[in-house]
Length: 152
Image (cartoon, rainbow, N blue to C red; front, side, top):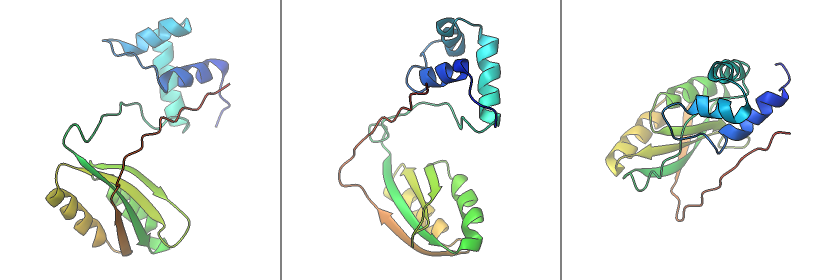
């Protein structure tokens, strides 16, 4: 991985909370950074290839859109961890998926339009080879933390 340039850091700082809602958001970012849209797009592509950037997207209030969310913890046999994680990633409602230390070693969040769809997805995941146990951890109260990393 190459080291981040001053320009890259400025671009990533802006992207974390300032992507303009307009017809040409990357051109607007470019103007703010004193460059052109092509340069911004080229750097974003390189930053994605190098692993600094996973995705660019927005956050929606899933509850207001009629979705229900849950945090799920799985106990997966180590040799099946990667295929189980890849299978979870195929579900459109799986928004996070990460390995953790401890008895329950694979965690993910799931958004579903209703209880029956949530149950169907969880039943399918529970049946995957290597899944030994599952905890469905429904939130009682929602806390939203806006994490932004200031790169200097």
